[in-house]
Length: 111
Image (tube, rainbow, N blue to C red; front, side, top):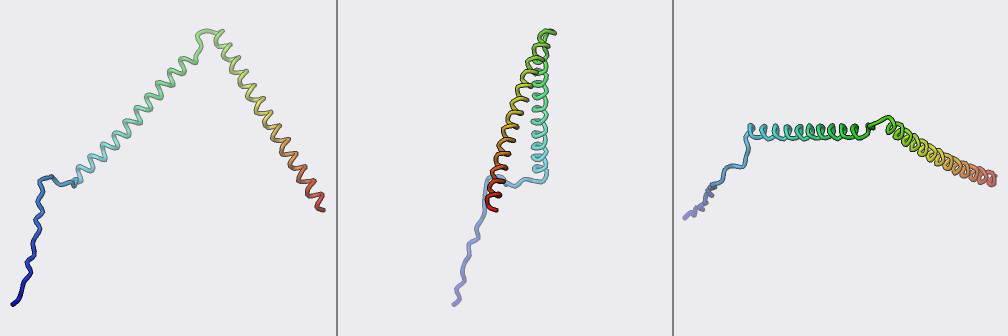
């Protein structure tokens, strides 16, 4: 007597729609993503332009006296910064000169 094995066939039954997207749906999603990115960039550009316009309006003085005062103030700041940088450069140069002299003396003492 031969025994045959009975195999059960699984029936896949689901009431939910397939999760797969068609090519058209994928293209629509990609187009929406690109559109959103471009829109966000455009909005940022517009906001930056508005901020720049506001900064220009606030920077422009109302009278000649204010303009001269602002120019004098900026000139003082620039000269202060320049002298600060010059001092730092001189300090660094002196430091490197001292190191070079030290190395020269070290090499000289070895010979």
